[in-house]
Image 1 (cartoon, rainbow, N blue to C red):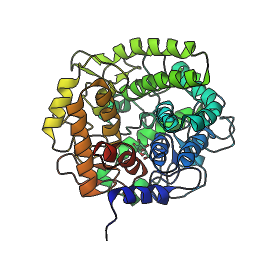
Image 2: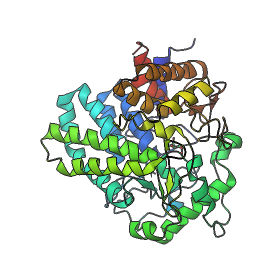
Image 3: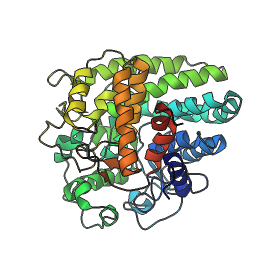
Image 4: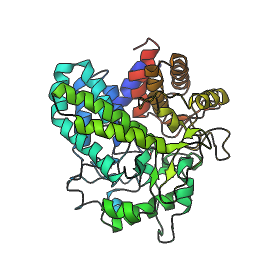
Length: 420
Ligand code: GLC
């Protein structure tokens, strides 16, 4: 007998739970990933509030001395994943004994901590108290080490959470991969290589990583001479929203939040530099060349989540939703690089739908939010809790039994359907 979807989602969270942190999925991603963990916490908050807080507390146990919270924390060595801790080589430079990657990921924590807090404010005060300064330090790191252009940049495609998005193509084409040498990927032994980034993509990922490792992960060296610095709508929108929620959390704790309010004002201005008039959308911009990527991607639709209300990309959203029965496509289907199977170059991600949907709801675009709810629900009902889905026929793709898809079901999709 098949279990109801709520029970299946809970079973996935529990199956991926490693006690104090949750892996995205067994096999393909065997460690703690940053923004996946924030989603896991949101999902756990539906069934076990204490476990939700523990997830965030464990994430911050990997925080670097400079405030950065890594995109992967390698709690227990697992040979099934490449590149592992030995390749990142951050030991001895992070100021933290836990092995980790050397880059960060979209900062959902303040926003989701607020949502978890609101479920039980008395517990929330106790748990956010010790986390608050750590979150502030992380946001400060973003503003100082990734905020030079006004918007927030990534120094590695993985930092955006949208690994092989078309946004990075031109900047990646300029990266010299001649020194990369031989290596053994592990992702393609877990899932179909057609769905994964290409070999050339992986060469570039490693070339960028090796540059930073050779410079001992020194942020100044990475910003000044790094091979890859691209201002990113995902990080910019998510951080802006997180700043707003951090002010809210600070207010609960009676903190002075004036510095964070200053960051909000400056990031609101900075995000304007990501407006590409040629495509009438928010766009990624290569800081090494000053050029826009020229791609309409789902990241642009995070503007409402960020609290912006200008509606300038609403017509693109409508167009993308009309173009594929199971939207939102991660890349515009009219783009020559669109591919409905390949990771961030076309497929629909329920996690992104959730963030976009939350923003649309808050901005009063109820019909659009409703469309994203029902699309996400149908994808999960038909294809299970996959990593992502083909937007044309709804086939599940990538890793199966994914934590964040299950968490989105529990915390957003099923609720909006009245099943929560
Ligand atoms: C991939 C995704 C990234 C995610 C990670 C773990 O690298 O692109 O966003 O955090 O997998 O699920």
